[in-house]
Length: 426
Image (cartoon, rainbow, N blue to C red; front, side):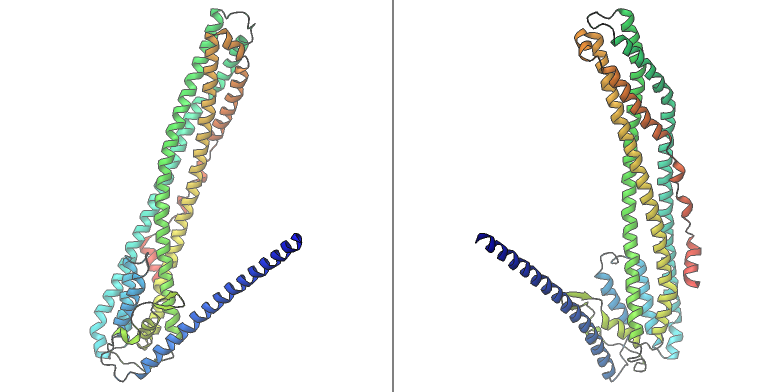
């Protein structure tokens, strides 16, 4: 009876889980459908409003474009203080308004249009300089790492002969320790052990000092790498979101181009006419200010094509180049961080093994002061020789580190003049 009840409960639970999964999938499908239908209906509604406007004397497409993009930027944490996005938005609004003006007024607006282009290019050049500074900082980090590793390799190579020779001295100590434990060590035996231990102890203490200082320096470098990685990641997010804004403008200006291209002549209607400049919210999801941006584009007549050329041939191309360069810097940082972490592991491993050898040497020193300690620690020399060989193996690995594989500076080449020029002409 209990077995049947358990089986029934299991089947019921499985059925309930399937029902819940189907409900979740259906809710997601309905939400997506609501969003798609909502955006479509919203754009169609905007288009109908535009076609019903009787007078365009007070319509200012540029004002709507700028205010709409302003809201889109403010709603984005990364782009809120981004000067270049502001310049792009400002230029777009001027270009939109410019193409909808009568010929005589266009002549008067040419200086303003040219100045906006100039400011946008200056902003791009300024940003390229920031990228160049980032590249220089990465080069500095790489060189700091290489100098640190080369100095440690030099110190290790200077110590290896001493430590290797000291292992032979441990054989002398082992020979002394193997004497009859019932007999006390004579002064000659103690002197031989002391000479061997003094030489060994000096090398171990120097090695511990090098390992600790190198770990500290490596940790400081790690902090700088992580700080710069965060900055590069933030820049990447800004560039990606610029591309999203540009893609949105390009996408909707093309789609809406056929709706009212012949309907506009110029002017200024407040943004509230088109549902306000805030983001459109449908089914719990916020969308960019679709209506205001679309209306600003399509009412400009040829401005949609002008904006398309701008977005596709100028600003977007530059953003892709910038993103590619930031990816290279990020790749270099990841490579450097990996190399630095490996180096830190080498030094930690060496420090631990050197500390083990140091502890064994202290055990041997106890044997010189007490016959009882000597009887208890008769195998201490064997343990010391093994730990010393393991330590020397770690030192040989440090000595073999190839710093040339870490030098990624040759892949970084970002001329501020050449990059912006290519973004404009290519």
